[in-house]
Each structure stands twice: as C-alpha cells, then as structure tokens.
Length: 135
Image (cartoon, rainbow, N blue to C red):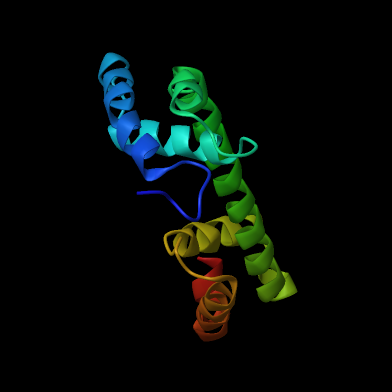
C-alpha cells in the first residue's frame, strides 16, 4: 500500500515505529513526539524519502529542531493574539497587564480559527465593563 499524499510511504511510516520507540525510551521522550518530529522533518525533504534516510533522521537533534519549531509557532500565535487583543481594547484599557491577561485567557482556545478568535475577543471586550477589564 502506498501513500498518495505524502513523501513518506505507509510502509516507511510503519517501519519507523521501532527506531522511534527505541529513541524515545533511551531519551525519556514520548513516541508521539519522536514520530511527529521525524515525519515533520521527512516531509520537508525533497522528493520521496527512503527508509534508510528516514532512519537516519531519527535523532534527538531532529526532536530538538521540531520542538524549536513548535515553540516558534506558539510564540507567533501568542504575538498575533496579543495584537488582536490590543487592537480590540479601548485606548485607555491598553495596558500590558490587560493585554497579557486577556491574551492568556484567550490562549486557552488554541484550536480556534482567526475569525472565531476575533469573535471571542469582541465578545470579551464588548461585554466587559471598564472596571472589570482593568481588574
């Protein structure tokens, strides 16, 4: 059986489980984190990738690179969310404390689309009296 959408075939994905599990156990990582990291990096390589090449990227370096990318994306999302919150607040309520508090509150809704986040921000800012927002 062959994958029709990715650069990594189903057989190669299945064959990666053993080396990824060994790395995860050896370095106290979760198998899901290791597999995600290897597949993330493998999909970014040019063309279809062989099992030997995939096995070569089952390293702690790949996991560290993946985790850095995940952290970078999380920071970018938080920065974007903070900008959206700041823009929605009245000027007199745009304090770093208010922005941070609302950003943290809304950050828990990580799966929302941009339009859903904008609606949630409008709802929170629009229904919060000035005293409540400033608290």
